[in-house]
Image (cartoon, rainbow, N blue to C red; front, side, top):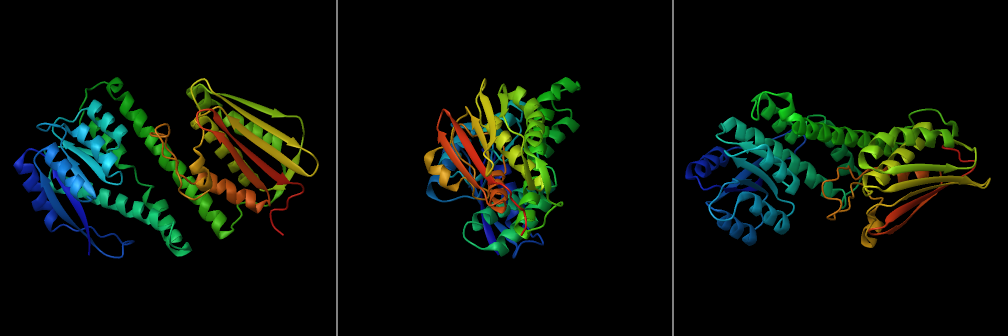
Amino acid sequence: MNILKILVVDDEPGIRSGVSRILTRFTVDYPFMDEQIGFEVLEADSGEAGLAIIEREPVDVVLLDNKLPGIQGIDLLKLIKEKQPDTLVTMITSHASLDVAIKATSIGAHDFVPKPFTPQELKSSIENITKHLFLKRMTSKLQKEGKQIRFQFLQVLSHELKAPLNAVEGYLQMITNRQFGSSIEDYQEITQRAAERLKGMRNLIMDLLDLTRFETGKTPSVPQQVDIRALATAAVDLHKPYAIQKDVDIHLHTDCEVCLYGVPDELEIIFNNLISNAVKYNKKGGRVDITICCDGRAVTMEFKDTGIGIPEDARKNLFTEFFRIKTAETKGIQGSGLGLSIVKKIVDIYKGSIEVESTPGEGSTFTLTLPLPAAVKD
């Protein structure tokens, strides 16, 4: 049996002993797990005591009260994410508020549960946390093991992420309980955040489906002559609402009419991923320039943005599955880490090339070259 170490930081002895009593003999078991997972519970009656444990040994999960003597829960959360960034933190407090929940989530809290709570509510939260940790650790294995573990991971992840994210469940519970009032306006920010989480999950599922399709070699439709300029124009139009929201201008430059023999859905994925990234990682008032040209031998597509740029040490892993750049600028930006790896697979299918130039703080340029004519399949 695998054991997860859970640290309870709460100044109420009854809460600490209650969590220990509930979880001591509790186990989690899913069909896709090789063995059951049990729990070892550590207790701390203050933020300082909790911090001492964190500095002394690795902890998998922290159940953290916000109102503590001495250092407050929010401040301890920041320190935990600095010292043990892979530790999942759930805020568990009777002083739950929208401001605390939003602030804790933005800092890195995985979930929040208001108290008092029933044993079943605690077990349900721990089950969700355990599932999340299991999937996260399978992601790490992808870097070390072969296709079998990757296939298992994709099966589990694509299935499990069809359920709403834990955070969405928390927001919905707030609305159900009328926690912040009876007017719909009182919940506008909550519903917006829930919609963003669901959108991110839907995008991840679509990326997973694309990735598995390319790995299995299944083509969604018959190759045909594709009007690249028309495809690019449609992709730009699709992303304009998002660009307007981000205050980013998109400009398409093309002086040639060219058709590329290929699968429209695959070529559309290229444009959608690169335009979306150029907008997503841009700055307020920024710009995206898409330039398409051809010389009779190849089509060259350049996607240039004025965004935050890519650190040099991150570029070698840029097209690796599930790789995401972790900097202060990318914190809070949702993404699956699959988009660019899928783009690279498509480019390889078309026997093309993709290059990246970037200056942190100034922007990035992705240049794709696809040869003409390019048959998708021999």
